[in-house]
Image (tube, rainbow over all chains, first blue to last red; front, side, top):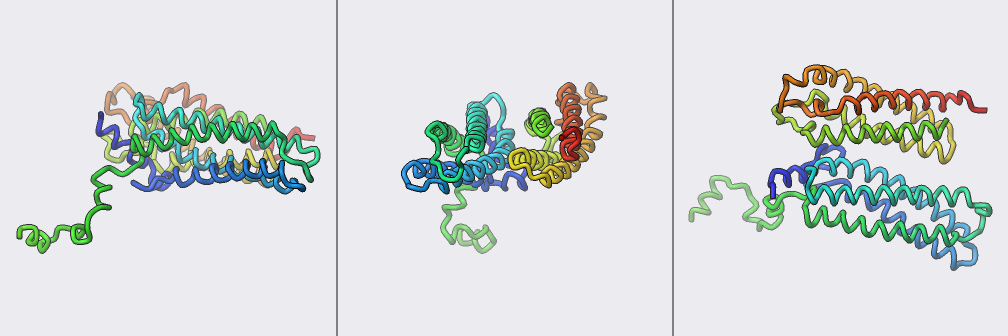
Length: 190
Length: 140
């Protein structure tokens, strides 16, 4: 293991854009597309159950569009975190898979949105078509796989996670956490 | 014209993505590098962020067809282009004398010349197409 390579993947390439050390922005931004697309699928299913489904169909399209925009924002920040990972490593390959799947999913949702926009002959009060619903299910399932890879990057490979010395600061007792002043050194000596 | 501009903008973005990846991987943002980059990090990241923002505005414009968004996108693109030109002029000296730098070459010396040239050319094409589309030249 190359400790320096691992440490590089923990550092923000731009604290302003990607969040400062130990506070990556990408995991916070991904909640927007995940939440919007999950809610969109709930609307899709509900639109095929309720009596007047128009508002759910329209709402679902809005949620897909919000998810696409959120995904682009998350991708902007996430790609900078990707560039921090040294090439030729398992972490880098995992990150490239994570990115490729997410871009495919975002494109699929963009096309799904386009399909709904152009197929909306009776946008007033029709349920979401079964084909559009299936595309959403497949996209969301793929997002689960991609999310698993994202989790692997953070929790297994520690990309953008603070190093263990920094983590240990969270487990000091109150009296240990004071900086080692002269008085504290005297106390240790006793 | 709108969609043509969108496609050429995405092609430009792919080139920029490659250059940005190379710049970061070769230590461009690091201040403690033995050969610090001549490209200021705020300019690089500002160019990247605004280019993405302008592209997203253009995508929304293509979908919803609200013309004010086309002008807003063009405004952002002009700033993006300005930052790009600044980076180009700061990149040229390193490109002219790469042999003397050896292993301590700054990050931008690793840019393939073809990619920089292609990125610049399609960027100009993007700007022209966006101006024409925003001004509604050639549309009925």
